[in-house]
Image 1: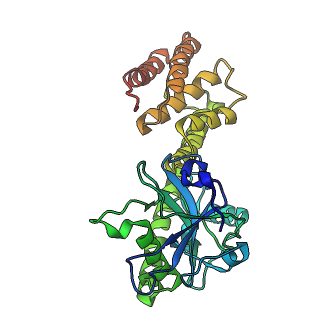
Image 2: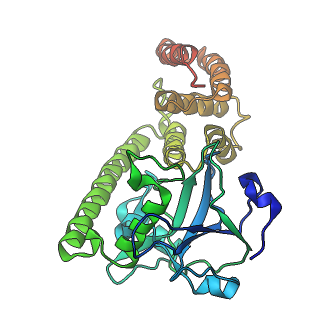
Length: 349
């Protein structure tokens, strides 16, 4: 076993750093054995400063692994089991159920177990300041093979390093051993005939309900787009042109990404700019882009200072564009309502 002097500080931990934590005061079956935590990265645009990501293994006895081969031979702890149909979540708001299945299955390889579950292994460990890591035994940095059937969902849940007497079940050692019992040893309710039937039924109902609502919204937007097609000109309503509806569609997709902590507000705006870069400098379409984006952002509480400033400029330019057109007063009324919302918007600090 090698000991890295800097590994007493978590700020120096890197991917592959491997730690052992001895199990104590749990049960006769597990006391004396070790939980092995292997530091890993997690592809997420939304970072939690106090959270580090690991995969966990468990030793078969009170003997620590001495090398990479012995580490690879240990069993990974399966932290979560998900019904196969939940691979279609989260919805983007842009696809029907059939389209989502085709897209997701063509872009990914899934490994479901004999019960029809996908398996997660990620351990999101919440590590508060002031907690020491004296019980973290540094074993070294190893290239441990990841599990072949790993699935990473958009659902975020945490394991807690701090032991709370009133909530002992959320303590990471207890949580991981509970996961091991339920998922690896298949003692959990989800592996019973009744449990599996209920869990799969609820998952299917949930997914189908979400996609049913999505398909209805897609039909509504398509009808609206056909009604306000550019061939019929631009109406006074903010969304009386197909450009506005396209912007609304793209925002809905990216907002779902944001809500699943895969994107920040600023990154959302940057991606929207990238998608519409060809019209941003156009004197007619450019202002519409910022007006619609702001109108989508403010009610969803994701407005940025940058979008607000651009939208207010866009409102003034749009009014200039409408100055000598029929319907100017109606257009101004629409824009004045948006302007009031933007000027009164309170940004969350």
